[in-house]
Image 1 (cartoon, rainbow, N blue to C red):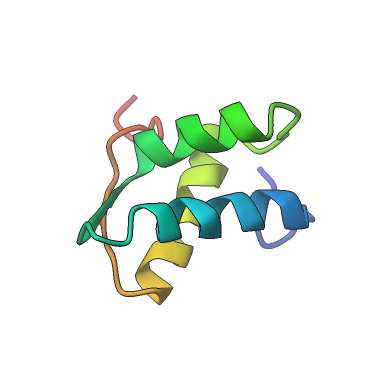
Image 2: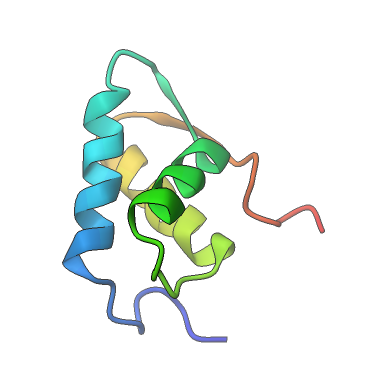
Length: 77
């Protein structure tokens, strides 16, 4: 499997994640499930898997001081 680091992540996807974090900045925790849904709605052509998106969202959130709830990335299946 190709990691997110090896794939080119479009600026639109990164910008969408940053915007999601800004819009939810009053919360201390980021839900990967919610963030994945937002990215998929705003960037319907996103080719990243839910797991890859979850990793990217988590890294961005942690870098910005959020806690992360891994509630929708398929890790449990």
